[in-house]
Every structure is written in structure tokens, then in C-alpha cells.
Amino acid sequence: MTINAMKISSEAVTRVAYPVLGLLLLLLLWQGYIVLFDVPQAVLPRPLAVWNATINNLPLLLSEGRVTLLESVYGFLLAFFLGIPIAVAISSSRTLNLMFYPLLIATQALPKVALAPLILVWLGTGIESKLAIAWLVAFFPIVVDTATGLRSTPTEMLDLAASVRATGWQTFWKIKFPAALPFVITGSKVAITLAVIGAVIGEFISSNEGLGNLLLVANSQVNTPLAFAALLALAVLGMALYAVVAFVDIALKPWFSEVRH
Amino acid sequence: MTSSVAEPQSTPQEAGDIYGRFVGVRKVFGKQEGAMIALSDVDYELRKGELVALLGPSGCGKTTLLRIVAGLTKPSGGSVVIRGREVTEPQDDFGFVFQSPNLLPWRTVLSNVLFPMEIKGRLDAAAKARAVELLEHVGLGKFLKSRPHELSGGMKQRVALCRALIHSPSLLLMDEPFGALDELTRMEMHELLLGIRRLTGATVMFVTHSISEAVYLADEVLVFSARPGRVSDRIRIDLPYPRAASQRFTTAFSEYERRAGAGLGVLHHA
Ligand SMILES: Nc1ncnc2c1ncn2[C@@H]1O[C@H](COP(=O)(O)OP(=O)(O)O)[C@@H](O)[C@H]1O
Ligand SMILES: [Mg+2]
Image (cartoon, rainbow over all chains, first blue to last red; front, top):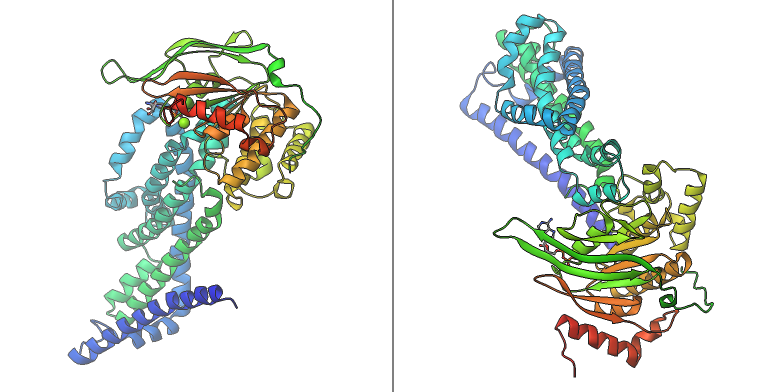
């Protein structure tokens, strides 16, 4: 192994080892706090109790997790496949742009989850309403980032298109759109995280399944270890979904290296 | 890399027909107060098959003039007439090489070179064969399927050159194409460009701020001065063809460099 390769692998070890060390330290503090102040389990369970609850309820966590996963993913996909055409429409028509782009930016300030109760009234308590809330929160980052990407095509690329007499349509599909893909991915990273939050909020407001629902049920039964186990499952779910998008990002990065700045 | 055909060449000056005419070409950026004259009354006759270097400090309007000729920018006054027709928009038989390689990073090398043909709806077997031939000619035959990020700066600029040549343009416009390359790569590119020019007979306008690059490549050097950008000298370079690197060290060469330097105001005539 070369010295360089050794450096890299020791760097990799450091990058894994330190967060693990940090986590262990936190768990230790957590445990220490409970022992020291004699905190009852109903208020704060010990780390080991959470772990046991996770293992014992694994089938339940998986089946409820599947529900939340589907709500989040469908919500995200809906946001993705509706958001991109809308961003394309706003970016390619000056009229549509003038009419809707400012509104779109303005709605960024609106806390979309505030609409959740209304959506439940409209769509009922089934999966549709969760999906709709997940869609709603995931939609805006995708539209706004895609639209931003379509407006930030490097001018030299546009000159290239002009110099070969590309039509507006050709310039759009062969230059602007591919050049905007890094922005689409950035938006998707935010959107996928928000979609999970949207799904859980939908479940909080009214549901009889999903991890958000499990969290509420466990809470009402003062089964704090199970509530923590549900939280842990949610964290894993969120990170896994984010990792998928981040992976696509990393895979495409070199192709787009020159577009980003 | 370059197929250095050593056959004797007629000096391009003898070709001589007028290819294009620039009459009072001006460009002003901005409105009344705070307006900036980027280019002031450029008159020039561009001869067919010649290589003209536009030499000047940065900000003197070289890119602006090149863009006006390319039809990418409208002049504020005057006109550029190429082969009897005024240029008001990009033309099908022009090729443009940008200051940065300006490749589309999501496309392969081959498909970058084919981009103009794709746009023109002429993406046929002949176009592909020509693209491969061009890339082989510039020494990139093994990189057809590579992506731009896998290439060095010099390789990228060669791809950009092939892209500009794919449709056999009669006018090649180059904006400081080798400015970002190191000295050795740049000298390789000079040989490549001279070789390609010999093969294609294209008329070339070449922007540079390097005195020796201008003198080495050009049949005529237009020396620009800044604020307002205007032509301060026209130097015919009567060095024999084919040009060879050894000519860079001749007295005649230095004399041309001295005169160009004087035109730029960096040197004074002895
Ligand atoms: N689109 C533009 N708007 C305003 N000023 C410009 C624009 N393009 C160029 N200029 C100005 O015109 C002058 C000449 O620019 P340019 O032709 O790029 O010079 P050069 O290529 O010789 O460095 C510079 O001062 C530059 O700032
Ligand atoms: Mg310039």
C-alpha cells in the first residue's frame, strides 16, 4: 500500500470512528443522567431499554415503517413528477414566470403543514391525505430549485447554442434542462427529508397506522421505550431515503462538475 | 498527433480574395451617461483563407469584435459583411471556439463534437465518421467515450476545436482558445491549428493577448488599444510557410514581436 492510500484509509477510519465515539459518549451521558437522578422509565428510558424495545417490536416497527415509507416515497415521487413539469412551464414561458414565480417564492414562507388539518377534511384519514401532505411539503423545494436551475444556465453554454443556431426548444432540452439537473437533485435532497416529515405529521393528525401513529399510541400508553424505538425507526427511514438521493448526487457529480459553479 | 504534411504550401496571402468587410464597427455598452465605448470604428478587410490575430490587452474589445463577427452580439454601429451578406445572426458555416472549452459535461467527447450536427439535424453516419476522424487527428481517438471531466485542459480545448470544425466551417472564430494552457501544450496546439488550417483552408480570426502567439500564427496581426477599444496597428507577418517552431527564434520574428509590443505600448520603437 502506498503512503497515500494509507493516509486515505486512516482518514476514512477517523471519519467513522469519531462519530461512533461521539454517539457512545452521548449514550453514556444519557445512561449516567438516568442513574444519577433516578429518572423513571416512563419519562426517559435507558438506552438499553430502547434497544430491547426495538428488537422485541421489530416486526411491528417494520410493518408500520413500511406504511410511512410508502407515504413518504409516493408523496416525494408525486412532488417530483408534478414539480418538474411545472418548473419547466414557469421557466419557459415569460408570462407564466411573471405570474407564478413570485407567488412560488412567497409560498416558501407559508408553513405548509398548517394546511394538514384541511387536507384531512378534504381527503379523509386514509393514505391519500398523508400522501397529499408529504407531496405538499416536498413539492416546493423541487419546483423552486428546478426553476432556479433552469434560470442559471452558464451563459457560455447559451452562446454555444446560439452559435450553432439551436432553436429555443433545442436549447431547452439539450442545454438548459440537463444543466439544471444538479439543482433538481439539490431540491430532491430537501424534498425527500420533508416528505417524511409530511407523512408523519399526517399520521399525527389522524391515522391508525404508520410510525407516527405508533409513536402516538406508545406515548398514550406511557410505553416510552416503544416511543423511542419508533423515533429510532423514523430516523433510520429518513436517513435511508436521504442516502438514496445523496447517492444519485454523488454518482452524477463528476458529469456535472462544470455546471455547478 | 498533427499529420505534418511537409509539402510546400502557397502562402495564404496569395489566395487574396476578400472574404469579409468590417466597416465602422462600433459597440457601446450601457446608456447615455455611464456608457462605455467597448469598440470604436473598426474598419478591416478580411482575406479568404487568412489567419488574423486580434492582439490586445484585456478589456480592449477583442471578444466583443469576435462576437459581432459571429453574429452573437449586435454592433451599435457599422456593419460586418461576410461574402457579400451582412451578419446579423450566427451563420451555418461559422465555427466558434470559446475562451473556456465550454464542453457539455454530461455528454461524451464524441457526442460533444457531434453537438452542432445534432442541432442542425445532420447527425448521420458521415458526420460520425468525420467526428471520429477529427478526434483521431487531434490525438483523442482513444477518448471518444470519455466525459469532459476525465480530460486535461489541453485535451478539452482540442475537443472544443473538433466541435467547431465538425461542420467544415469556412470561418473559424477563436477567442483566446489557448489562454489557459501551459506553454508546452500551447505550442502543441499551435502546430495543430496550423495543420488544421492547411488542411481545411478556413479563414481564421484568433483572439489572443500573447504577442508571440499572434506573430507565430498569423498572416496579419491587428493590434488593439483599450478605452476606447480600437485598432492601433496592422502588421503583416511575412514569415515563410509552413511555420515551424524554430522560426520563433529568428531575428525577423523578434522584429515583428517588437513592433507588436510597440503597438501595445509595452515597448517603444528604437
Ligand atoms: N455584455 C457587456 N455589458 C457591458 N459591458 C461589457 C459587456 N461585454 C463586454 N463589456 C465591456 O467591454 C469591454 C471590452 O470587453 P471584451 O470585448 O470582453 O474585451 P477583451 O476580450 O478584449 O478582453 C470591457 O471593458 C468589458 O467590461
Ligand atoms: Mg476576451
